[in-house]
Length: 202
Image 1 (cartoon, one colour):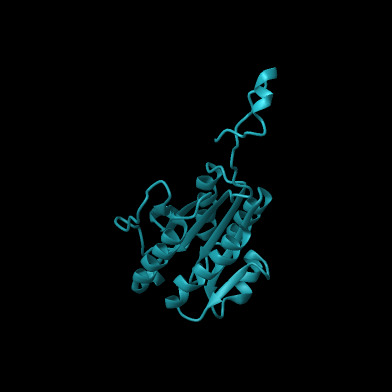
Image 2: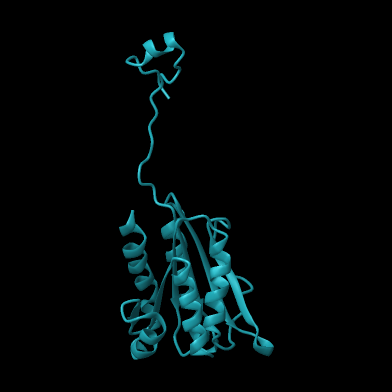
């Protein structure tokens, strides 16, 4: 920092704290994860998935103090859960190749996987936004995964299609989901949630 003329006299008595220093107060320290269902029912809508990842990644890439991660997921053979990282602050750009898609919907396992990744991040506030267009393979596993996240201080939100309100409320809570009328609205809805949950908390 710069010398502070009002403090120079302190040097005579051995106190060398004579510099000005500028600090940023209230800088956000947030981790945000976007988890997107790319099961078989999403096959014709992968372009919207890429657009949503772009909105998410580009929207947060230039925000100081915000770490982010976007995963897609689907069900693989023998009950496996396949996840693919398509953007993160560490990656620095979108990576849309080699995405596993077209299987089942192991949403509970995918949420648990997202938590494992985000537990390694250092933010004080952690938010997961989960998009799905249908019913999970196992609804109880979703409830358990969401409860485990919230027990550790995570905010967990869901985005689903209109008509899924009862299902989403039972899994995420009455005030913790949003709906869209068509898949094409997903990028805009993710942007709205980011603005509310992340930008609004700064």
